[in-house]
Length: 215
Image (tube, rainbow, N blue to C red; front, side, top):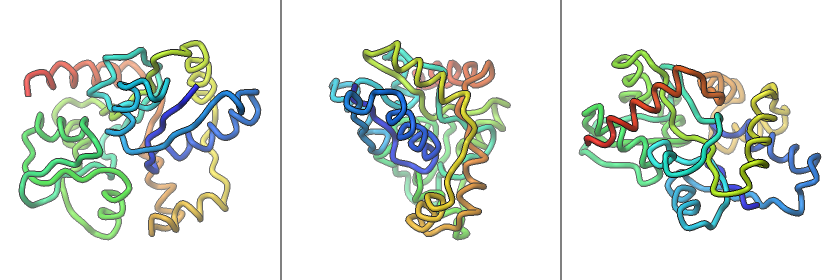
């Protein structure tokens, strides 16, 4: 099985889980792990270059999906529209669509670069917070979806959903240094990310997909 994962800080807990899972589940020789930005993971699943992965919400309805996602309840601090000419971020179709749906003008900036921008004092409209203000619902940025190996993917998702989030200190320091933030800031950011979809997040996703067809 070839598994695709978004190469952003918001999936660090899942990436660490995957390393442990592969090592202890007997899948080591049968599972390849590929990381990239959301738009490239979307394309890879569409072309059957990967079997499963975290897919942008805007494209998730095309596939079988689990109850794992990348979810923010109110502010996410890594998806902004900043002042400037209207410009999309080529790394994410979902965030671009959300900005258009909310009629927020400016440049869309997402991912680790957006988080770093915010932590250094940058200002902008947090699209997840804006969605919450208008709907009172969390926003689902991506879902764990699959083309095949459904039984294995669902088992993996179920196992992760029961795991506590633990990041070893040496990894915490390494990942924070890579992004030019502090370990405390990294942990603070991850507290704003949820992974298990509940009634409200499913309702929100359904609403977003419905509204996205009109823009």
